[in-house]
Amino acid sequence: MRYLVRLDDITPYMSRRRFEAVRDILDRYKIRPIIGVVPDCRDENIYAPKGERYSDIEFKELLAELTAEGWTVAQHGTNHVYSTTDGGLLGINPFSEFAGLSYDTQYTKLKQGQAELRGLGIDTTLFMAPGHSFDMNTLKALKTLGFSAVTDGLYHKPYIREGLLFIPCTLTAYDKIKDTDTICLHPNLMDDTDLRELERFLERHADEAADYDEDALRAEAVKYSPSIAHAESYTLRRRESRNRIASSKKLSNFMVYTNHKNKVIKWIKRVIYSPLLLTSKFQ
Image (cartoon, rainbow, N blue to C red; front, side, top):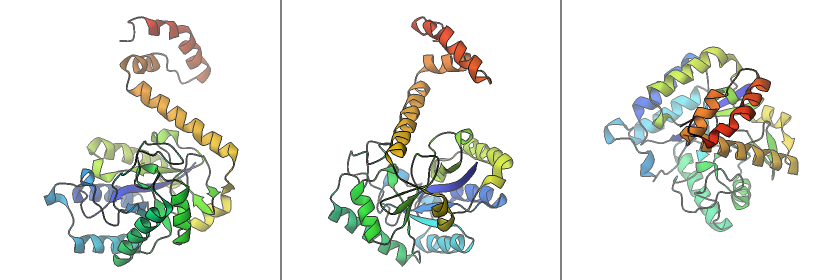
């Protein structure tokens, strides 16, 4: 297992307190993550209260510090405002800042974001789509603008699609990481419980963390194919099933009741007890 860490929704409007708490933990374990910087954030849903934010000058200084320490910046969209209900190529979420828009519109938005980041002293070739949502027009525009990699994908290995490197990004729990993957964190939303969970994971697995290295990832990447498309679709269906289970008290109780460290015993129990789902036993 080898994993990268990415931090989403990095803006001057994020919570300084929460970001610094995550930064302290990552620094302690010498983790240098990818940070998704929103060039011109207009999404008030990810604004922290005014007293917790960075000033524009402080934020520019923060980015300079982090990049000097080896952190990698990805362009996280442009405004982080969802303007369509298109799930894009991965279909993870039914909304997007880009998917469903024309090529010219996407190109203009992405170029604007690129210029904003350059004004902050950042020139990156790595892209991070808000909502994990992008389409073929997004990829075409990214290539035209000189981007070479996307931190996304539901396969277990990096792959090349339309000339762009895609780096797998897990959307489940830490213990689901296999092969090459990326832990996706949103510092602005992390509470003390989340921080403790992150630290417990790093205590056990910090030595398996990797810095972002595009050349190394490209060297091991495979060519995108129908079999990868099928694998990503299967991964997404499993994720949706887990979400349905998590939202159902009955199914959650059933999964806990029939769980077992031995997979064979676990599935035997689930087959045997599945008729009880029609009763009130797991309410």
